[in-house]
Image 1 (cartoon, helix red, strand yellow):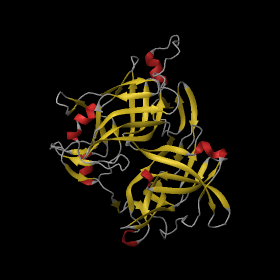
Image 2 (image 1 turned 90 degrees about the vertical axis):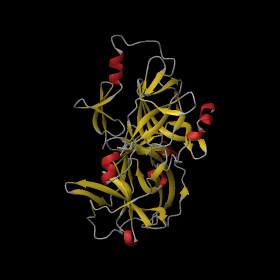
Image 3 (image 1 turned 135 degrees about the vertical axis):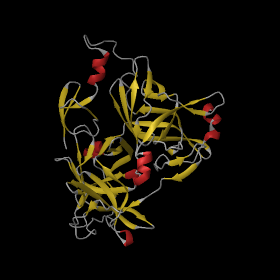
Image 4 (image 1 turned 180 degrees about the vertical axis):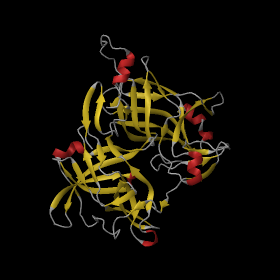
Length: 405
């Protein structure tokens, strides 16, 4: 903590790692504007329905935590990952409940899925035979003081645009990931002057990946640095480790070297800004990883290089500081997060492939380059794809496998 105490004077406007808000900064690091909760008219989204009132209401179901040992493997913490030009991530979880079906009065076991940074809580029925969790368009618990009741809806992409859909379901695949069956989902205001408008951004190509690790560190704020910790999903490919939920924003790749050092490439796009118009054209819709070093005066100085660190056992430790920046305007202003320091990424169980002692046995005739290539996932056209979001017939480690839609 010594370094962090020296850096307390550099703290900028506070950012909650779970709230996912970003501030715009000028050259003096003075906050200019906060990107807050927004409402969109959804003019590019078609209804296809005569009424927007057709959403399920589970508010009258009395929920009792269910004992469902056969389904235990399904429940727990996840990261929700949205596939755009860059992955954006946020915490998610699944819980088991029992309640009375409002239509049939039958007692059923339900799955409660909590997404959208905890804002969207939806209830569905899980069919172990098909691997489906069927939710349907439904009201969420949160009621906004200004806009009233809100529901979560599925969204279907058609030739003439995106359509609201009452269909909302997920599929559990053989790898333990859970994918949205529709093209996207969004939150929709259901009453008052803003009925039909959507809340925040549309959430496309959603995949939930089981959380198997923790990210911990310190984040700057108005009163100095505070410790944070949140769940992450880690994919270990020996020479590359993908972290979903990196800085609470998205997926970042960490390169692993043979000497026990690691490197996080600067400039990786991560997270989503949801900007529009001139701001979108100027700042883009993503933030990018930037490294910072501590100078002799204990101040953070932006580095042109990558973020350095080490790997040992079940933990990756970053030595440099990180800040996430959007593109900059002509006055060098842009959207940015606060500073992250002393970050660690820890597996809940086991060790990293390159973090352990290893077997000491090398594969005959297999070069390091071949190993690196074989840890990646490709489609049939030979293009590298993201295992978390890619679907269909894929190739990894020279073997084909099918990831269901």
